[in-house]
Image (cartoon, rainbow, N blue to C red):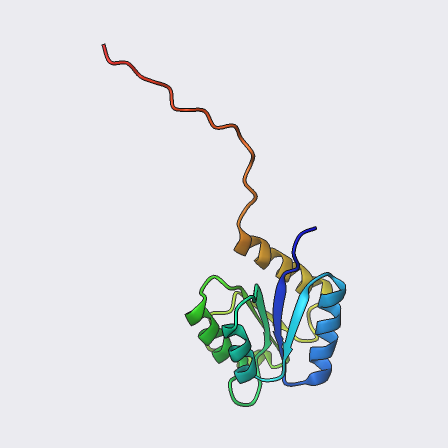
Amino acid sequence: MKPKRTILCVDDNEQSLSIRKVMLETRGYRVVACTSGEQALERFKQGGVDLVLTDLVMPGLDGGWLIEAIKGLSPQTPAILVSGKVKIFDRDTRADAFLPKGMCAPLELLERIRLLLVRKRGPKRAHSQTRPPAKVSVA
C-alpha cells in the first residue's frame, strides 16, 4: 500500500475548507486544514507536506504571500492558488496553478493535484538490467 500524500489546505472560510477536506480525504489524501496563512506557514515548517492548496484572499497573510514564503523554504513543493476573485489575480505569484473558485469542477482540482504530485515525485524509472561497460582495447 502506498503512503498517503499530505495536502496542506488553507481557507479562512471554514465551510469551503471543510468541503475541500472531505473531498480530498475521500480520494485517499491526508489533509491538514488551516484557517489562516500564518497558521498554515507554521504547520508547513513542521514538515511532511506534499502539496499546498490555498485560498488567495484571506486576512493577514494571504494565499499569494503564503505560497511565496513556502516556496522560499521548499521550492519543489507544488502549490495551487484558488480564488473567487479572478480579477485580483493580476500580480505574479509562484503558484504552480491558479483555479477560480466556482468555475472549476472538483474533478479538475483533483486532476491538477494528481499531476502536480506526480511531477514532484518524478517519472517512474524503467527497470533495466545494468551491464558493466564494455572493455575497449586500443591496438
